[in-house]
Length: 361
Image (cartoon, rainbow, N blue to C red):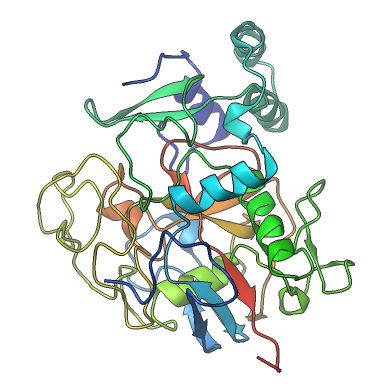
């Protein structure tokens, strides 16, 4: 299941062919629940050129455009297995990957998908319906390829060995939003998401597109994520502040690819505990590699127009940022974008939480 930048037809042609059985230095302890702002960094806002500043990325990383951001908080780490387990145990929540498993329904959808007369929107609708029936996309680390949607894969069984401090995997944007709302309630904050629409809510529970009025825990916007990965919008290639990708500094497929910005090195073939590598200058860990991280707003083509605190509502997909343990150096770049439906997930997708910073903070 090769996700990057493919059309829906190409995406499904690879990832839906078969359903396989599953293969068998921090400031605070990242295992601990994120109570209050203890594990969060205040990111000072500013103006930067968002997109492919090095001229080496994909079309969806262009054009470069000016973005101005308000202050916001971003978690130092990706959300861990232990943190997500605490949420599940407290609520009994079942993730998108643990939804109703129905391989027969999937086969019927796959037959419909094979029709040459479908429009792009019809294909996307079939894809979204397919995702309803549980499971997750499976990256086969041994053979280094996507092997379709695996009905046994979820955050509980991602197909690789994980510990409590590894980033949780198999998470959809919907799952991440539910976690954010739960954490907000736990901390006496208004929830950030309308779970029916995926839209954001202000501190009074009203629908809004102004990200700065959201009080509860949420996912970062694409612009916030890239600004933070680039250490305040500076011209850096990777989320650790470096120009070269090395396995000693990023968890990615370090022995694969012919890039001038790659120093060939080992491939771990699994996640590593959050905070295992050095942070960037803002104190953020694993902004490149380890797990893909979902954005709060929808994925859309860039505009050349200047923007302030952008929150994208057009489109039916969410962006995943930061590369992954199964991805190469190209994917790990700070400007790289991938996009999938709101209920999509695989054994490479996790998330990181954010909060808007109000004047009183």
